[in-house]
Length: 78
Image 1 (cartoon, rainbow, N blue to C red):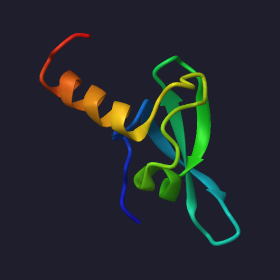
Image 2 (image 1 turned 90 degrees about the horizontal axis):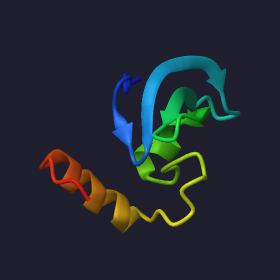
Image 3 (image 1 turned 90 degrees about the vertical axis):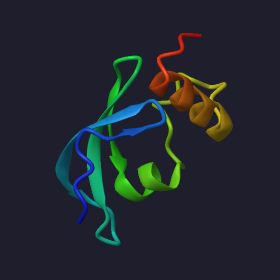
């Protein structure tokens, strides 16, 4: 298991590992969205980019997340 606590995936920030597993044994991680909503999300969904936010960001796409991440890392406010 790779600890992804503190990592950011799209709009999610991973807070901690839960005790929950899916039927295949994959770990759920408790995450907080930029909007403040919290949810348990499968680690594989986070790492594969299948879960990018809680759903309130309906216009989000993988391309938009990557661009937003690059701008944020460069301290460019948009």
